[in-house]
Length: 527
Image (tube, rainbow, N blue to C red; front, side):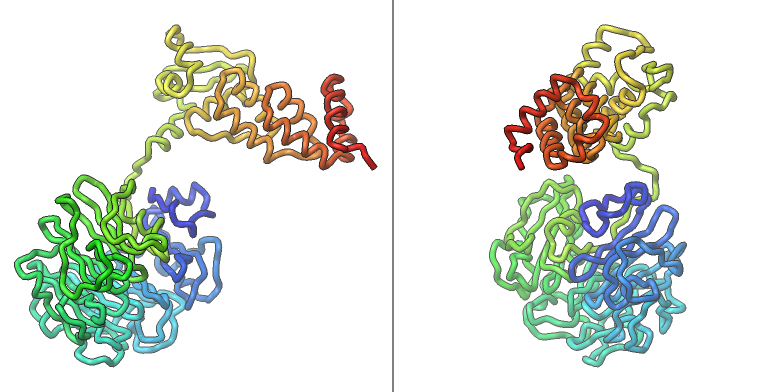
């Protein structure tokens, strides 16, 4: 399961759908578009669909996921997007598909017509196997298994690397000083491109007015230029922000250069740097650097698993690496980048790994490895003694004094007792309001304060004119003061309808007396 819960665009997906996600990407001007791939290799899209970037064949926005049939079964290995947006993927077979905005031929099909469905990018790539793609605002670059780089699209600053500033309508190999060299990693800023070679050299081309090419000057470059300042340093990964660049070395050092108005270089100030500058990370070895061309945010992960962030963080300028509680650089972009776009394709291994919480939920009422069963109304509920003792003081005391493998329960119904035991495994309750009354009784009896609160919330959400008196009676009986007040006010606000119900006619004499007295004080019977 891939945890995409930090991105609001996924908030409406049901848990059973979220559990199937293996890859995902969030993009768009407000992180309002998303693609995801399921464990069955089906591809879905949802969001605002600007320029047809969801690849669904139309321009309709969709709040619910829709399947992209042409991509199902393609096994996506790399995905990137522009600001149009346009979207480009590479598949396990080495094919490239592109769709969305195409005003600058960034789809590589020789036209400037927007693409509403994924189309194979074929020119000069049919005999090649592409392993990685990267997009700038309106240009695209692709890396092949041979270590060659192809580029196409918007070229106003030389970001296609063709030696001119004419837009490139179809894929063209970036040669010049990359000729006969093997590229292993690529990245794009808004208007620039970067490439890391197998020997650890790093090259850049395109827009350079903020120094994002790391050449020591601010002149645009129409062909790849080696970053000479990193001579003797072996770069293994590059990442590009909107107008800044991060590089990771084989010794775990991180360098930054380019725009710095938000502190995105992590240098402790906001001065642009045209040359690579070593980021001070307190001698912690870095294993990953992260940036996204849509934002001014930077992140890195250390060998010990700590995640650092700096740059523009929810509107604040953080000029030095800040230690977070996150376990992934992806979380930085979900929670602090503006927009909260993903910096790369989110992926998890295709295994059936379950979290501790998921594993516990799965084993509830499963007889296979349980060591205790409750008999309630003639039905069995299978549980685990250790978990019950950890989660509930009542059971800790009870089970420490007993070695029984079976316990009969008479004071509560099967439905209520099963809901209680399931709560101990899942931290949630799933009962209609009327049944939650019985669980409230149990929670009071076992002194389970949090469960009592959950029951009250469930009852509040399900109150109606028909059951209001029943719920009020329960609240009084179990001394749930907050719930009692809530139910009473509901009865007052719906007094005419409530007093005509059978529950009101059957109301306990003392409770009725107290209700009328309290309602009078509230002025309920005044004309």
